[in-house]
Image 1 (spheres, rainbow, N blue to C red):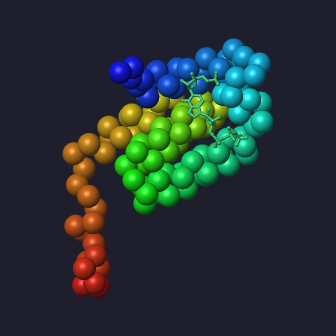
Image 2: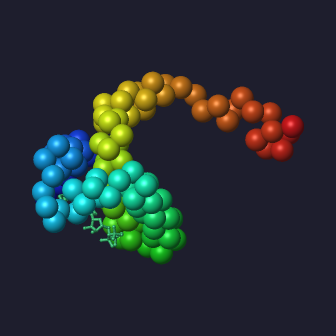
Image 3: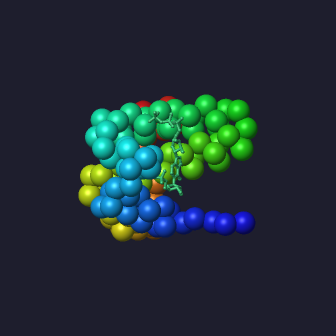
Length: 108
Ligand SMILES: N=c1c2ncn([C@@H]3O[C@H](COP(=O)(O)OP(=O)(O)OP(=O)(O)O)[C@@H](O)[C@H]3O)c2ncn1[C@@H]1O[C@H](COP(=O)(O)O)[C@@H](O)[C@H]1O
């Protein structure tokens, strides 16, 4: 089975940005502009929720759609995948803040 990493997907989205291909969906999204890309991310996020409520195949399918559109959004705003990884990395080892809250079991 062919697999594609998020890094490869990001690179593909980046390539379509710097070297648009007429008729390619990714290039079409960039040409439509930021609002179109944001709208697609919103739609795909909603479809992830609906997919999760249906079955795991739909969840997988819709999550892939969302990841793709998130990569397009990151590329279009000049945010690198490395910056997202750094943000995630900064959280490694951090304890959930939930335990610090007094009210999480209604103990306010
Ligand atoms: N991973 C994806 C990928 N995931 C989802 N999509 C597209 O995202 C769209 C989502 O479907 P929707 O029904 O929500 O959207 P739509 O009705 O087609 O489009 P809108 O009119 O709503 O904008 C579909 O057109 C899918 O083809 C993707 N398009 C491209 N890729 C990757 O990007 C590569 C380059 O694609 P092109 O840019 O098309 O060459 C492909 O080979 C893939 O590896």
